[in-house]
Length: 77
Image (cartoon, rainbow, N blue to C red; front, top):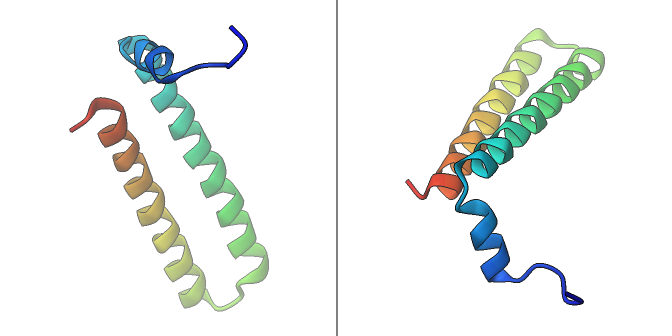
């Protein structure tokens, strides 16, 4: 086992529903972490309220789209 994981090994891991759920929970926690960071950056450095709101809404839409894409990849919807 010198070459690491090959395609068949990854496929076997993702065949398990628990592995898919754990991966999705990781993606959700990563998105939440990204949201907290972007929210803090926008609150600290973007002073006009309208621009801050636009940036935060764009960030939320982007993160929800990424979570939807993760669902599509994990469950092939």
